[in-house]
Image 1 (spheres, chains in turn yellow, purple):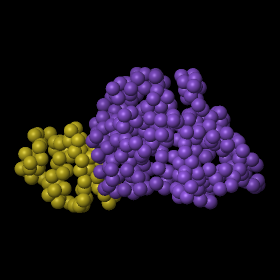
Image 2: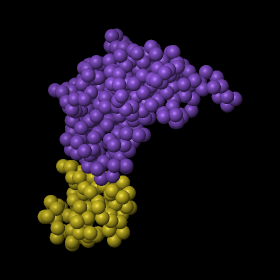
Image 3: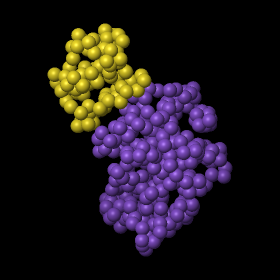
Image 4: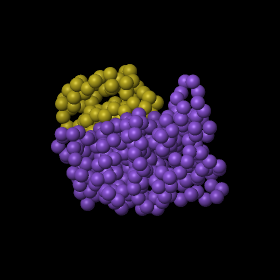
Length: 84
Length: 287
């Protein structure tokens, strides 16, 4: 996973920035927190791993968030966090 | 101006302007009447010139060109377009070289030290709205560049004449009969252009601190309802980055500077068909 992703969390959204590529990704707040969790963990996390971290990252409805993640352009996420 | 040049202090920058074109003397004296000349010995940031081009077979005669430090960044233009050419050239100087700062394509005004950033794609109505707000007493920092010092987060003022196009010239002239404007120049590639002189306060207060307080994305439409809508800060951050000339050069520092600015601001989209109603909404924001 790429290192050095920076995050800025706003009440309703998260912006992720990758300094090497200059990519910016705007996510809703919950999805942004999942991406932060993945960045902190150093890799793509599965459903159970995210659920285990839900409290730490302020995620209330993990299933709903994962559904939203599926709806996102997945290539945007891959571009941001890199291959697993 | 045909000798050593006119050394004009504009905010923190000094432009040395040379030209032998007599027709530029009067509009420059009009539009920059409140600006100081740079003190003797002060280094000029930009040495620019607007000069006649010798007739060549590939260009019509009576053409002028803009030069920066002897370089020619643009194609020649008709001599009648000399003033717009100079102003576009000065814009280009700032946008392409002042990379110590984060520069966004936006107008910026201020009230009581609080900055209003108006990012805008061409046609959004940014300059007309800027002219109305400036004429209503908002301090003009720039009609073209929102300049952020990435170290301090302050907005930097480089107050210069506001460029108005086509119908906006007549509109501003009618709304503010005492406004000082250069004579319109027709048939430029952007239509008819005139420049509105900035207020004396905008010049004299240029060094006073301004911090971002509002980001408003104007969107003019002839039949839309005029309204101010809050937008998400993440979206605002992404749109500011898109509107930036040099965001990529600053890397993480640029991201953090923009994010800090957005975090400190109220952010809106302003759809409007009436510039008066739009300015009223913005005046109410400032309280």
